[in-house]
Figure 1 (cartoon, helix red, strand yellow):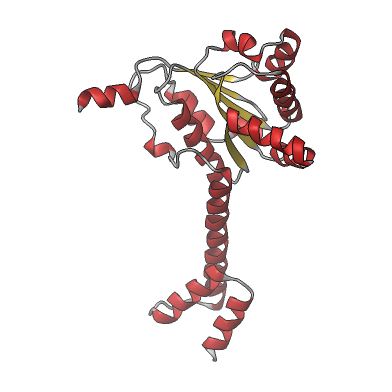
Figure 2 (cartoon, one colour):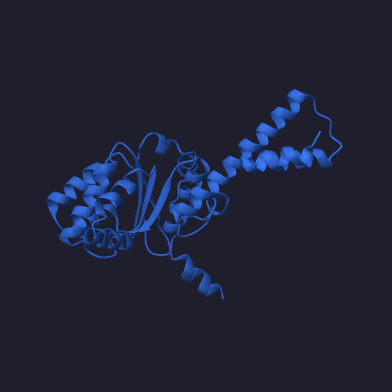
Length: 243
């Protein structure tokens, strides 16, 4: 049998996982039946494609931190419910199109938790997108100017999970309020959103600035959302004191 011809065909068909498994098989002393070999090669191709898909999803998510759930401290007391975090990490909230609100003072790990949940979402095969709110609004305002706004809004809406970090660092202007309302409205009951903020939820009305728009946004976002309310000192300050 001309094994090189077979390898060339697998390479031409971009069956990388199957090709690598076949090379390993040829170099080993393992003996498979025809059925076992086909199953082995199919499994290898499937696993390779899953790994590449997860890698692509993580790259496209543009997470602020590449932190897997195993890298998240679930033991240090800071108001973090370990059971809730593990439940969210399973992806059920995304399947149910539910939202997550993470609040707490600066430096307690809000962004890390966001990114750990985003990382898990990618592992589960969900299209995920991370944005700092200021940069998200700037990007969409620029899109309004160059005519690509509707295309960008539609792209954001298609993601299974949108992470909006650093909400509330500055009061929203009228344009920003309408953009945020459109994003939340597009996703309500159809996609999941994680919002992280230094401000407690009760102060979000003031940050949004317009009571009618604030009611519309928060009515869709808050009432059925999972809440993570962190407490404690800044980890960065704590680490600095140790040194």
